[in-house]
Length: 392
Image (cartoon, rainbow, N blue to C red; front, side, top):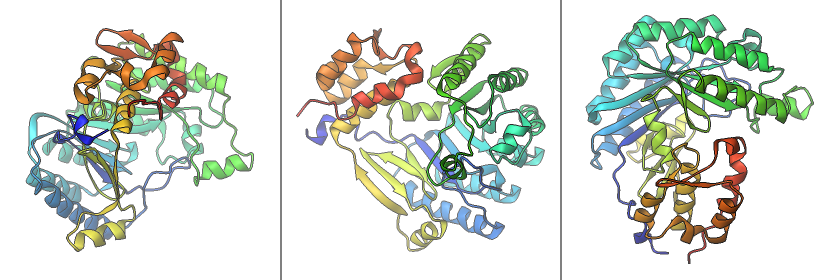
Protein backbone atom coordinates (compact mmCIF):
# COMPACT_ATOMS: atom_id res chain seq x y z
CA UNK A 1 0.00 0.00 0.00
CA UNK A 2 1.33 3.42 -0.93
CA UNK A 3 1.84 6.10 1.72
CA UNK A 4 -0.72 8.37 0.08
CA UNK A 5 -3.45 6.15 1.43
CA UNK A 6 -2.89 7.76 4.84
CA UNK A 7 -4.66 11.08 4.36
CA UNK A 8 -3.60 12.28 7.84
CA UNK A 9 0.11 11.68 7.28
CA UNK A 10 0.73 15.37 6.66
CA UNK A 11 -1.20 16.63 9.69
CA UNK A 12 0.75 19.08 11.82
CA UNK A 13 1.25 17.98 15.43
CA UNK A 14 -0.53 20.21 17.92
CA UNK A 15 0.83 18.44 21.01
CA UNK A 16 4.23 18.27 22.68
CA UNK A 17 5.60 15.75 25.18
CA UNK A 18 8.62 16.87 27.24
CA UNK A 19 10.63 14.31 29.19
CA UNK A 20 12.30 15.40 32.44
CA UNK A 21 14.36 12.37 33.50
CA UNK A 22 15.24 13.32 37.09
CA UNK A 23 14.07 11.64 40.28
CA UNK A 24 15.05 11.88 43.93
CA UNK A 25 15.31 8.08 44.00
CA UNK A 26 14.23 5.18 41.80
CA UNK A 27 11.10 3.19 42.67
CA UNK A 28 11.44 -0.59 42.76
CA UNK A 29 9.00 -1.16 39.88
CA UNK A 30 10.23 1.62 37.57
CA UNK A 31 11.92 1.02 34.20
CA UNK A 32 11.44 4.57 32.87
CA UNK A 33 14.36 6.61 31.57
CA UNK A 34 15.20 8.33 34.87
CA UNK A 35 18.33 9.40 36.74
CA UNK A 36 19.40 10.74 40.11
CA UNK A 37 21.54 13.74 39.15
CA UNK A 38 23.10 16.87 40.69
CA UNK A 39 21.78 20.39 40.10
CA UNK A 40 24.47 21.17 37.52
CA UNK A 41 23.26 18.37 35.27
CA UNK A 42 19.68 19.59 35.58
CA UNK A 43 20.78 23.09 34.53
CA UNK A 44 22.63 21.70 31.49
CA UNK A 45 19.59 19.65 30.63
CA UNK A 46 17.22 22.64 30.68
CA UNK A 47 19.66 24.50 28.43
CA UNK A 48 19.71 21.51 26.09
CA UNK A 49 15.92 21.39 26.01
CA UNK A 50 15.84 25.05 24.97
CA UNK A 51 18.14 24.30 22.04
CA UNK A 52 16.10 21.27 21.01
CA UNK A 53 12.92 23.36 21.16
CA UNK A 54 14.60 25.92 18.91
CA UNK A 55 15.32 23.20 16.34
CA UNK A 56 11.75 21.91 16.51
CA UNK A 57 10.25 25.40 16.26
CA UNK A 58 12.25 26.13 13.09
CA UNK A 59 10.09 23.55 11.32
CA UNK A 60 7.05 25.80 11.75
CA UNK A 61 4.86 24.50 14.57
CA UNK A 62 1.25 25.72 14.81
CA UNK A 63 -0.11 26.79 18.21
CA UNK A 64 0.01 23.86 20.61
CA UNK A 65 -3.19 22.50 22.10
CA UNK A 66 -1.54 20.27 24.71
CA UNK A 67 1.85 20.12 26.41
CA UNK A 68 2.79 17.36 28.84
CA UNK A 69 5.86 17.42 31.09
CA UNK A 70 6.50 13.83 32.20
CA UNK A 71 9.31 11.95 33.82
CA UNK A 72 10.89 11.32 36.06
CA UNK A 73 9.74 14.11 38.34
CA UNK A 74 9.51 17.43 36.48
CA UNK A 75 8.78 19.26 39.73
CA UNK A 76 12.14 18.15 41.14
CA UNK A 77 13.71 21.12 39.34
CA UNK A 78 14.53 24.08 41.59
CA UNK A 79 12.09 26.99 41.33
CA UNK A 80 14.38 29.29 39.27
CA UNK A 81 15.23 26.45 36.88
CA UNK A 82 11.56 25.55 36.55
CA UNK A 83 10.77 29.16 35.66
CA UNK A 84 13.63 29.28 33.14
CA UNK A 85 12.37 26.13 31.43
CA UNK A 86 8.80 27.40 31.17
CA UNK A 87 9.97 30.79 29.92
CA UNK A 88 11.84 28.96 27.19
CA UNK A 89 8.77 26.93 26.27
CA UNK A 90 6.77 30.12 25.69
CA UNK A 91 9.68 31.73 23.83
CA UNK A 92 9.77 28.93 21.26
CA UNK A 93 6.12 27.90 20.91
CA UNK A 94 2.77 29.61 20.85
CA UNK A 95 -0.05 27.95 22.76
CA UNK A 96 -3.76 27.94 22.09
CA UNK A 97 -5.72 30.12 24.45
CA UNK A 98 -7.40 26.99 25.85
CA UNK A 99 -4.26 24.82 25.79
CA UNK A 100 -3.90 22.07 28.38
CA UNK A 101 -0.45 22.16 30.02
CA UNK A 102 0.21 19.23 32.36
CA UNK A 103 3.01 18.59 34.86
CA UNK A 104 3.67 15.25 36.53
CA UNK A 105 4.72 15.60 40.16
CA UNK A 106 5.61 13.51 43.16
CA UNK A 107 3.84 14.69 46.32
CA UNK A 108 7.09 15.26 48.20
CA UNK A 109 8.43 17.59 45.47
CA UNK A 110 5.65 20.18 45.85
CA UNK A 111 5.92 23.54 47.59
CA UNK A 112 3.60 26.58 47.45
CA UNK A 113 6.30 28.54 45.61
CA UNK A 114 6.75 25.79 43.02
CA UNK A 115 2.99 25.70 42.43
CA UNK A 116 3.02 29.49 42.03
CA UNK A 117 5.72 29.23 39.34
CA UNK A 118 3.72 26.60 37.45
CA UNK A 119 0.55 28.68 37.54
CA UNK A 120 2.41 31.84 36.51
CA UNK A 121 3.57 30.17 33.30
CA UNK A 122 0.23 28.66 32.34
CA UNK A 123 0.38 25.13 33.75
CA UNK A 124 -3.26 24.24 34.40
CA UNK A 125 -3.21 20.50 35.08
CA UNK A 126 -1.12 18.57 37.60
CA UNK A 127 -0.77 14.82 37.96
CA UNK A 128 0.43 13.33 41.24
CA UNK A 129 2.08 9.91 41.40
CA UNK A 130 0.36 8.71 44.56
CA UNK A 131 0.12 4.95 43.75
CA UNK A 132 -1.47 4.08 47.12
CA UNK A 133 -2.48 5.75 50.38
CA UNK A 134 -1.16 2.91 52.56
CA UNK A 135 2.20 3.89 54.07
CA UNK A 136 3.49 0.32 54.36
CA UNK A 137 2.82 -0.22 50.65
CA UNK A 138 4.49 3.06 49.71
CA UNK A 139 7.60 1.85 51.52
CA UNK A 140 7.36 -1.56 49.87
CA UNK A 141 7.42 -0.08 46.37
CA UNK A 142 10.18 2.45 47.11
CA UNK A 143 8.18 5.68 47.10
CA UNK A 144 9.73 8.66 48.87
CA UNK A 145 6.49 10.12 50.27
CA UNK A 146 3.85 9.02 52.77
CA UNK A 147 0.08 9.20 52.46
CA UNK A 148 -0.22 12.50 54.32
CA UNK A 149 2.07 14.10 51.77
CA UNK A 150 -0.34 13.11 48.97
CA UNK A 151 -3.30 14.82 50.64
CA UNK A 152 -1.21 17.88 51.50
CA UNK A 153 0.05 18.20 47.91
CA UNK A 154 -3.43 17.92 46.40
CA UNK A 155 -4.84 20.48 48.83
CA UNK A 156 -1.93 22.85 48.12
CA UNK A 157 -2.45 22.50 44.36
CA UNK A 158 -6.15 23.26 44.69
CA UNK A 159 -5.41 26.26 46.90
CA UNK A 160 -2.91 27.49 44.29
CA UNK A 161 -5.67 27.52 41.68
CA UNK A 162 -5.39 24.13 39.99
CA UNK A 163 -8.82 22.76 39.09
CA UNK A 164 -7.61 19.80 37.04
CA UNK A 165 -5.80 17.45 39.42
CA UNK A 166 -5.01 13.81 38.63
CA UNK A 167 -3.99 11.03 40.98
CA UNK A 168 -2.17 7.89 39.78
CA UNK A 169 -3.11 4.71 41.65
CA UNK A 170 -1.66 1.23 41.29
CA UNK A 171 -3.15 -2.11 42.17
CA UNK A 172 -1.71 -5.60 42.21
CA UNK A 173 1.12 -4.41 44.49
CA UNK A 174 3.05 -6.85 46.71
CA UNK A 175 0.86 -7.89 49.69
CA UNK A 176 -1.81 -5.38 48.69
CA UNK A 177 -5.34 -6.33 49.71
CA UNK A 178 -8.69 -5.24 48.36
CA UNK A 179 -9.16 -3.34 51.63
CA UNK A 180 -6.01 -1.36 50.81
CA UNK A 181 -7.48 -0.41 47.43
CA UNK A 182 -10.78 0.55 49.04
CA UNK A 183 -8.95 2.80 51.51
CA UNK A 184 -7.11 4.59 48.69
CA UNK A 185 -10.36 5.17 46.80
CA UNK A 186 -12.04 6.65 49.87
CA UNK A 187 -9.08 8.97 50.38
CA UNK A 188 -9.25 10.05 46.73
CA UNK A 189 -12.96 10.81 46.95
CA UNK A 190 -12.33 13.07 49.94
CA UNK A 191 -9.94 15.26 47.92
CA UNK A 192 -10.56 17.88 45.16
CA UNK A 193 -9.54 15.50 42.37
CA UNK A 194 -11.23 15.33 38.96
CA UNK A 195 -9.17 12.59 37.28
CA UNK A 196 -7.84 9.20 38.39
CA UNK A 197 -5.47 6.91 36.50
CA UNK A 198 -5.50 3.36 37.89
CA UNK A 199 -2.91 0.87 36.64
CA UNK A 200 -2.11 -2.77 37.19
CA UNK A 201 1.43 -3.36 38.40
CA UNK A 202 3.54 -4.79 35.60
CA UNK A 203 6.87 -6.31 36.67
CA UNK A 204 9.38 -4.98 34.15
CA UNK A 205 12.72 -6.67 33.33
CA UNK A 206 15.75 -5.12 34.95
CA UNK A 207 13.89 -3.67 37.94
CA UNK A 208 14.37 -4.70 41.58
CA UNK A 209 10.86 -6.18 41.48
CA UNK A 210 11.89 -8.44 38.59
CA UNK A 211 14.91 -9.66 40.53
CA UNK A 212 12.85 -10.31 43.66
CA UNK A 213 10.22 -12.14 41.63
CA UNK A 214 12.90 -14.45 40.20
CA UNK A 215 14.00 -15.18 43.76
CA UNK A 216 10.44 -15.90 44.86
CA UNK A 217 10.47 -12.84 47.13
CA UNK A 218 7.68 -10.77 45.54
CA UNK A 219 4.32 -11.78 47.07
CA UNK A 220 1.88 -10.47 44.47
CA UNK A 221 -1.92 -10.85 44.58
CA UNK A 222 -3.32 -13.45 42.19
CA UNK A 223 -5.12 -12.64 38.93
CA UNK A 224 -8.55 -13.14 40.49
CA UNK A 225 -7.82 -10.70 43.30
CA UNK A 226 -6.40 -8.17 40.84
CA UNK A 227 -9.59 -8.46 38.78
CA UNK A 228 -11.61 -7.80 41.94
CA UNK A 229 -9.45 -4.73 42.61
CA UNK A 230 -10.11 -3.42 39.10
CA UNK A 231 -13.85 -3.96 39.51
CA UNK A 232 -13.76 -2.13 42.84
CA UNK A 233 -11.92 0.83 41.31
CA UNK A 234 -14.33 1.00 38.39
CA UNK A 235 -17.49 0.61 40.45
CA UNK A 236 -16.45 3.04 43.18
CA UNK A 237 -15.36 5.82 40.87
CA UNK A 238 -18.26 5.55 38.42
CA UNK A 239 -20.72 5.59 41.32
CA UNK A 240 -19.14 8.83 42.52
CA UNK A 241 -19.32 11.00 39.43
CA UNK A 242 -16.33 9.77 37.41
CA UNK A 243 -16.68 8.63 33.79
CA UNK A 244 -14.69 5.52 32.89
CA UNK A 245 -13.54 6.90 29.55
CA UNK A 246 -10.42 4.76 28.96
CA UNK A 247 -9.40 1.34 30.24
CA UNK A 248 -7.23 2.77 33.04
CA UNK A 249 -8.60 6.32 33.30
CA UNK A 250 -11.55 7.99 35.01
CA UNK A 251 -12.58 11.64 34.83
CA UNK A 252 -15.26 13.98 36.03
CA UNK A 253 -17.23 15.28 33.00
CA UNK A 254 -15.00 17.60 30.98
CA UNK A 255 -11.82 16.65 32.86
CA UNK A 256 -10.49 14.00 30.46
CA UNK A 257 -6.72 14.14 29.85
CA UNK A 258 -6.66 15.88 26.48
CA UNK A 259 -2.98 15.17 25.86
CA UNK A 260 -3.42 11.44 26.37
CA UNK A 261 -6.45 11.48 24.08
CA UNK A 262 -4.03 12.53 21.32
CA UNK A 263 -2.22 9.21 21.79
CA UNK A 264 -5.37 7.11 21.99
CA UNK A 265 -6.80 8.73 18.87
CA UNK A 266 -3.52 8.02 17.06
CA UNK A 267 -2.83 11.65 16.27
CA UNK A 268 0.70 13.07 15.73
CA UNK A 269 2.72 14.63 18.54
CA UNK A 270 6.09 16.26 19.02
CA UNK A 271 8.56 15.13 21.68
CA UNK A 272 11.61 16.62 23.36
CA UNK A 273 14.05 15.45 26.00
CA UNK A 274 16.24 12.41 26.63
CA UNK A 275 14.47 9.20 25.61
CA UNK A 276 11.29 11.00 24.51
CA UNK A 277 9.16 9.41 21.78
CA UNK A 278 7.44 11.43 19.04
CA UNK A 279 5.19 10.61 16.09
CA UNK A 280 5.15 12.93 13.06
CA UNK A 281 4.25 12.27 9.44
CA UNK A 282 3.89 8.53 9.92
CA UNK A 283 7.38 8.26 11.44
CA UNK A 284 8.07 7.45 15.08
CA UNK A 285 11.29 8.66 16.62
CA UNK A 286 13.04 8.04 19.92
CA UNK A 287 15.56 10.47 21.32
CA UNK A 288 18.88 9.34 22.76
CA UNK A 289 18.26 8.04 26.27
CA UNK A 290 21.47 8.91 28.09
CA UNK A 291 21.60 12.53 29.18
CA UNK A 292 25.22 13.03 28.08
CA UNK A 293 24.56 11.54 24.62
CA UNK A 294 21.47 13.70 24.29
CA UNK A 295 23.32 16.89 25.25
CA UNK A 296 26.31 16.06 23.03
CA UNK A 297 24.06 15.66 19.99
CA UNK A 298 22.37 18.98 20.65
CA UNK A 299 25.73 20.70 21.14
CA UNK A 300 26.59 19.56 17.61
CA UNK A 301 23.43 21.21 16.33
CA UNK A 302 21.57 18.07 15.35
CA UNK A 303 18.30 16.56 16.44
CA UNK A 304 19.10 14.03 19.20
CA UNK A 305 17.48 11.04 17.53
CA UNK A 306 18.52 7.53 18.53
CA UNK A 307 16.13 5.88 16.09
CA UNK A 308 13.54 6.73 13.44
CA UNK A 309 10.98 4.18 12.27
CA UNK A 310 8.64 4.64 9.34
CA UNK A 311 5.29 3.09 10.24
CA UNK A 312 3.68 1.12 7.42
CA UNK A 313 0.11 1.85 6.39
CA UNK A 314 -0.97 -1.53 7.75
CA UNK A 315 0.61 -0.76 11.13
CA UNK A 316 -1.05 2.66 11.19
CA UNK A 317 -4.41 0.98 10.64
CA UNK A 318 -3.72 -1.46 13.46
CA UNK A 319 -2.64 1.37 15.77
CA UNK A 320 -5.77 3.36 14.92
CA UNK A 321 -7.98 0.44 15.92
CA UNK A 322 -6.09 -0.84 18.96
CA UNK A 323 -5.62 2.60 20.50
CA UNK A 324 -9.19 3.62 19.76
CA UNK A 325 -10.55 0.47 21.35
CA UNK A 326 -8.99 1.55 24.64
CA UNK A 327 -11.60 4.30 24.82
CA UNK A 328 -15.22 4.11 25.90
CA UNK A 329 -16.04 6.15 22.79
CA UNK A 330 -14.39 3.42 20.74
CA UNK A 331 -12.70 3.72 17.37
CA UNK A 332 -14.40 6.00 14.86
CA UNK A 333 -15.46 4.16 11.71
CA UNK A 334 -15.91 7.36 9.62
CA UNK A 335 -12.48 8.68 10.63
CA UNK A 336 -10.85 5.35 9.77
CA UNK A 337 -12.58 5.34 6.38
CA UNK A 338 -11.67 8.96 5.76
CA UNK A 339 -8.05 8.45 6.73
CA UNK A 340 -7.28 5.21 4.93
CA UNK A 341 -9.90 5.06 2.17
CA UNK A 342 -11.46 1.78 3.26
CA UNK A 343 -13.53 0.48 6.15
CA UNK A 344 -12.33 -1.29 9.27
CA UNK A 345 -14.17 -4.40 8.08
CA UNK A 346 -12.35 -4.31 4.74
CA UNK A 347 -8.97 -3.78 6.39
CA UNK A 348 -9.24 -6.46 9.10
CA UNK A 349 -11.41 -9.01 7.26
CA UNK A 350 -12.10 -12.29 9.01
CA UNK A 351 -10.36 -11.23 12.24
CA UNK A 352 -12.79 -8.34 12.67
CA UNK A 353 -15.79 -10.47 11.78
CA UNK A 354 -14.64 -12.99 14.38
CA UNK A 355 -14.33 -10.33 17.10
CA UNK A 356 -17.85 -9.13 16.30
CA UNK A 357 -19.26 -12.65 16.28
CA UNK A 358 -17.75 -13.36 19.71
CA UNK A 359 -19.04 -10.09 21.14
CA UNK A 360 -15.50 -8.97 21.99
CA UNK A 361 -16.13 -5.87 19.88
CA UNK A 362 -19.55 -4.32 19.37
CA UNK A 363 -20.85 -1.79 16.88
CA UNK A 364 -21.98 1.53 18.32
CA UNK A 365 -23.12 4.73 16.68
CA UNK A 366 -20.18 6.01 14.68
CA UNK A 367 -17.85 3.09 15.26
CA UNK A 368 -16.86 0.13 17.42
CA UNK A 369 -15.91 -0.42 21.05
CA UNK A 370 -14.99 -3.16 23.48
CA UNK A 371 -17.81 -3.87 25.97
CA UNK A 372 -16.80 -2.64 29.41
CA UNK A 373 -16.95 -6.17 30.80
CA UNK A 374 -14.09 -7.19 28.51
CA UNK A 375 -11.80 -4.26 29.32
CA UNK A 376 -9.74 -6.30 31.81
CA UNK A 377 -8.79 -8.68 28.96
CA UNK A 378 -8.40 -5.98 26.31
CA UNK A 379 -4.77 -6.90 25.63
CA UNK A 380 -5.88 -10.31 24.37
CA UNK A 381 -8.29 -8.59 21.99
CA UNK A 382 -5.59 -6.18 20.78
CA UNK A 383 -3.29 -9.14 20.13
CA UNK A 384 -5.76 -10.48 17.58
CA UNK A 385 -5.45 -7.22 15.62
CA UNK A 386 -1.67 -7.34 15.28
CA UNK A 387 -0.75 -8.41 11.75
CA UNK A 388 -4.43 -8.75 10.86
CA UNK A 389 -4.75 -6.13 8.12
CA UNK A 390 -5.53 -8.09 4.99
CA UNK A 391 -5.25 -5.36 2.37
CA UNK A 392 -2.31 -5.73 -0.04
